[in-house]
Amino acid sequence: MKKKILVVDDEPSISMLIEFNLKLVGFEVQCVYDGEAVFQAIQHFRPDVIVLDLMLPKMDGIQVCRKLRSQNNLVPIIMLTAMQDLSDKIAGLDNGADDYMTKPFSPQELISRIQAILRRIQTLPSATENAPVTIGQITIQPDQREVTLRGEPIELTPKEFELLLFLCKHRGKVLSRQQLLHGVWDYHFLGDTRIVDVHISHLRDKIEGNARTPEYIVTIRNVGYKLTEPAIKESFA
Image (tube, rainbow, N blue to C red; front, side, top):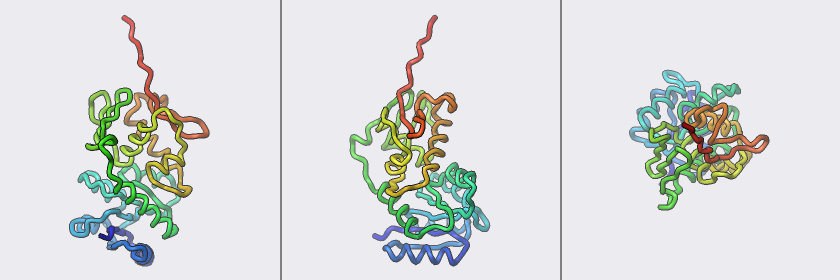
């Protein structure tokens, strides 16, 4: 079956360009032109990926992201933005977008990113990969996509979950930002490594006692990041 892509952009010329190129490589495509229309479209179209513009009438891309995630809809979202300001991109990631691209963009790069997402979500984990992972006071249940810290559940976005699990499976190893892009986002080209830094920052806010002095996710200057087992703190009577 053809994979379905929902394109949400209020500029017909951009929607038509994206639709043409996606259909050319075999995707089934539906276009809508405002944020509210997304929720009608997903009921019958059931997209595998949503390409979502940030600036939309009726409901902007951030609001659409937030509402989808609040409904526990985990469909991957690639957000499009005409703005160069990193804060706008971070806002999209904060509210559940998996990736972002800045206009103008190459249709071929968009296709590559969609295909990367589809490869990742189509890879079925083995029984071994589904086994619980524990590091320090963090426990990850891959099959249930649940994470607990000191026995209490913590809420992660889908991408934060994948990043934490990838780091855990490579604990103790120094991973460059490009390696993380390849392993978590499945980018085989030179992507924007700031997306990694944003997600690392969000993860630290959720799992570290003090994000400024992290015990789990350690920055290796000029290289990348490493997940470490926190030292056991002894208490004295």
